[in-house]
Length: 65
Image (tube, rainbow, N blue to C red; front, side):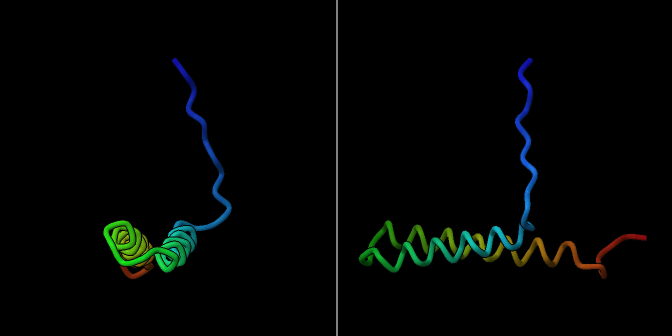
C-alpha cells in the first residue's frame, strides 16, 4: 500500500482561497471577453465564496456545546 503524502499548510484555508481568487481575477483581466475569461471569473467567485463559508462555519458562535 502506498503512503499518502502530507503537507503542512503554513496559511489558513481562507487566506489561500483569497489569494487564489486574486490570482484568478488578475489572470482574467489579461484575457479578452469570452468563455475562458468567464471561467476564470467564475472560479475566482467560487474561491471567494468558499473562503467566506469556511470563515462562517468556523465562527465561535456556531460551535456546539
